[in-house]
Amino acid sequence: MDYNDFLKLKMVPAFGCTEPIALAFAASRGRAILGENPEKITARLSGNMIKNVNSVKVPGTDGRKGIEISLAAGAFLGDYTKELEVLSDVDKSKLEILDDLIKKGLVDIELVHEIKGLYIDVVLEKASKKSRVVIKDFHTNIIFESLNDEILFEKKEDHEEVEGKVDLSFDKIYDFAKNGNYDDIIDVLDKEIEYNYAIAKEGIENPWGANIGKMVLEEAGDKYSEKLVAYAAAGSDARMSGCEKPVVINSGSGNQGITVSVPIIIYAKDHDIEKDKLYRALIFANLIGLYIKEGIGELSAYCGVIPAAASSVCGIAFIKGEDKELIKEILKNALATNSGIICDGAKESCAIKIASSLKMALFSYKQAKEGNSFKSGDGIVKDDVDDMIKTVGHIAMEGMKETDEVILREMIGK
Image (cartoon, rainbow, N blue to C red; front, side, top):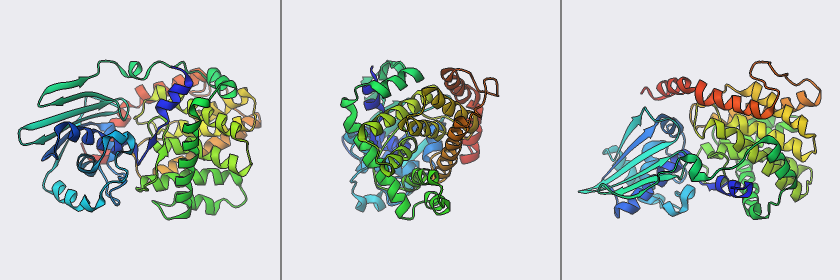
């Protein structure tokens, strides 16, 4: 798989936070298989899924939160053919009916302790009929479907085989962003610019969530870099509070898509950067973000906006024509500083984590420019940037497993 195909696979529009949307997608597909509205929905979910849906507002539901409404809205109102936009243009007049069904026990939720990462197993029942849909590893990756226990579809491939192999390294990504032909993904990049800027602007101009972006901007004074931070945080303010605007995602996450792209988009707009340079900077930042997250996984205890923020600031350095070795230093500085911020699910406070991560990544840029970068052996810092990225992946995937379990217990008491 080449980089263009990889970006087309990964940079897709999503309507709302991707975890509740993945539940809605699974339930909507299950309803299509069942052929009628269910009387009962049973969802067996990994802890990571429960954590990421528990506290976030679901778009298209007038501010409702959580797992039950995600599944019910998907099953009764969603259109699975739209994939991560499954809940766009739903009939909101039926939401109160869903509230009543949920109160009467429409949805049962079970925690699957033994499976980590992204796992969704949804069963819909009506009288003697039963459909089942299983999603694993990434948000639209259906691996199993059945009707009345008859298997309709089963995918045997593992995650890597499903997506195809892509050769990721810092130097190869940099070279492609500098010199590669990106004609096949211009429409993807244009959507990222349009959608992600629009939701950031919405978050700045109107009250959403905790208004982190607006507060950052109010405190910015004449410090331009704070504007970049503010708009990215504002996009999350809006998205986590149910704003009905789509976002082009990165690593399965709208917040990461916003974080990796919005500062670059704002910088390019303010400095009249030509379109080719903007496109190439977005390609670079998105690919670096995806590269780091390949080792971390789409859902873990390691907050995904850390690599997204580091990648975004590297994209700004790229658009400014900074030396490749300096950009490597920026990335290492940022990962050394920010790694350790936990993911406690999708919710309004994601915006301030974006702000914090971008502020430190921007400081890492200044640190590198002034010759003060961390040296190999300073904690987790490695001499080679690819080794540093592998180290971060090991910390997230192996070192933070127990952290993830403790976070989930503290959040939901299970």
